[in-house]
Length: 245
Picture 1: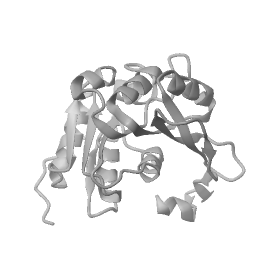
Picture 2: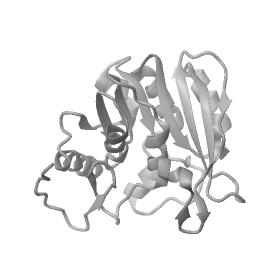
Picture 3: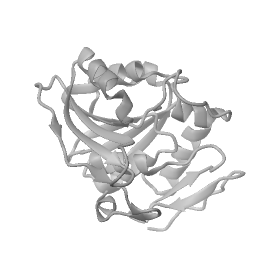
Picture 4: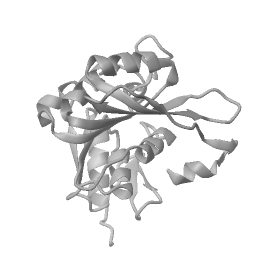
C-alpha cells in the first residue's frame, strides 16, 4: 500500500506501529501512547461485523491497533482535545483507513447524545487513572487530561459506556488495581457486570500496577480472574507473552 505524503507539525513524529505497515502521528511534548494502550488492544475482542468505539482515544492508537488485530466492521474514536483528535484523524488518513475508522471530536460525558443509545457492540477505554485527589497533576494540560480526571470521571466513562452498548455488549477497560472496588461498584450501578479480569505486573516480584477488565451490559454475575500478565523479564526486556499482544 502506497502511503500518502503527510506534513508533520512542529514537534510531531511518525512512529511505526509494527502492525500491517501502520504508523501513528505523535507529539512527545504532549502525550504518547504507552504499553497500557497496547495491552488493551490485545485484550479487547471485536468480532466480525461488530462496531466498536474507543472513549478518550487520544491520538487514535486503540482504534488503529484494533483494526489491525481484529475482524471488526468499523471503529470510532472519541476525543475531546482538538490537537489529539486532529493527529488521530491524520493518522487514519495516512494509513488509508477512512472506510474503517472515524475520529470524532467530542466530550465523553455527552457520548450517548453524540452517537445514540445502544449504538455499539464494543466499547474500549483507557481512561484517566487518577481522580482529583490522587497524585501530582502534570502542569502541561494535555498530559493532565490524559492522566487525571480533569474533564471526566470514572463514573462518566462507565455511565456513557453502558448507554452506548447494545444489550450484551462488551466494555473493555484498563485501569489501576487500587480503584478496583470503585470500578466494580460503579459498573454494577450502571448494569455492567464484570466478567473477566487480568492483573498486570511490571515484574514478577512487583505488585500489579494495571488491571484489564471485560464487562458485559446486562450480564449475569460471575467473574473469571485470569492468569496474571508479567510485562518485563528484566528492565527493558519484555516477556514472551507481551509480544502476543
